[in-house]
Image (cartoon, rainbow, N blue to C red; front, side):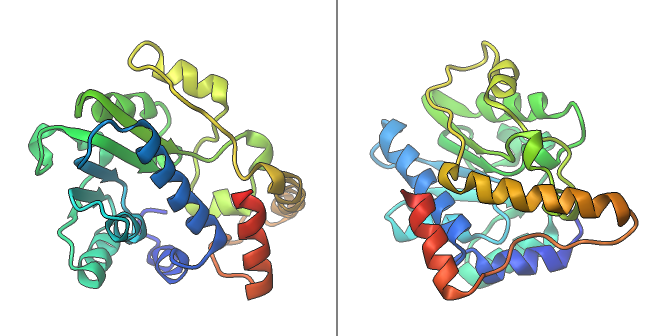
Length: 231
């Protein structure tokens, strides 16, 4: 997705309304409330995209947030739209010297590890864990399970999809895994069917360029998917 400004446009146009983003943001907020022991946590959004999650958390009372993204286009949009001061940075360059705070209570990284160069995901996790206070939490959302590979992955340059077993191996003894889940579980048969059909198309259109699934469906479907995924 790096360098694909039109995909960041799609993100910016949908992350306040699309059922998937709304559920992801609520799910992230729920984990912060459940697992963070700090009353006013200092939060890092490691891969903030166009700033929707930061804005959502601010609207829910969290003010101590900073963020970065590898895309200068996304960072410029975020800062212009929300009045923030996010910065251009690769997660593989993350260290205490590259952030405004030396340590954090909460670090969030949504859909970043999946697009990193092969073999660099473990380094990214180590860099994030190194910036957590004792007892701090790391929240990660990732593309799950190879069976759900499709045109969306091609459009966003997804390198790897993860299983719970692979995530546990990746974390190893670096941290304690408090919770792992697959979501949106109840919509998975529909998503699997769609992605299977897409994989069939990919076999015959290998040289064709694709765009992601990131767009608002009709309002009725958007509301229905949001309700089912929330459940």
